[in-house]
Image (tube, rainbow, N blue to C red; front, side, top):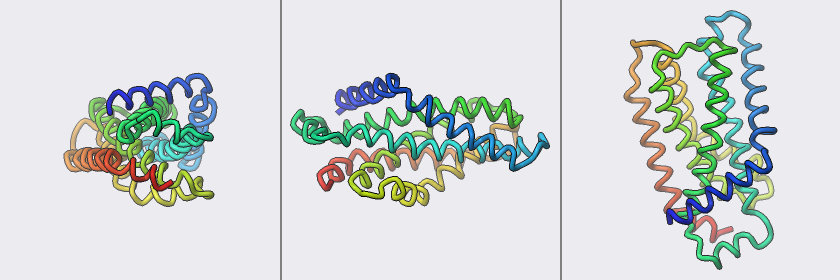
Length: 222
């Protein structure tokens, strides 16, 4: 399983590095959304800093849909699925590999958007460890959910619109928890973060397990 996951991860990232879709399409889209939100809130620095966490994660959400759609499109070529089955690729390994590739891309986008929030929105960072920990846990959840639901809607004609409709209700706890943790990371003390980190960790574990178990069945139903 892990050998197949590594092979899929390397393959997806190699394709992205060669085509630079994330660099030229996904990242600018997320950055523009961040800039537009900043204009909507006005020039006051305190207001921008207060809303920076929420605006950043909305940008990450938009990027998630694009990255997941791109990830699934790599497997939709003629004969790709059949070739993978004949090669004996473990479905659980494929899920882990594709989710890991989505995770790496989203984490890179989050790092750049976080830098943009720091520079453009004046977001203070008092607890970097909390910012990093919550980002990693939330991104695992985003990648796992996106990969699983992306496979579910892969064969549908309206998959571009079905994916957000299915994923958004599921991701609400992750987004709220991530925003709360980022807000808590902006102050030195005073905000409880244990419950929010627990939600992120639980969500990540549950959907990773669900993807490992269900991904093969989803593929067979396509």
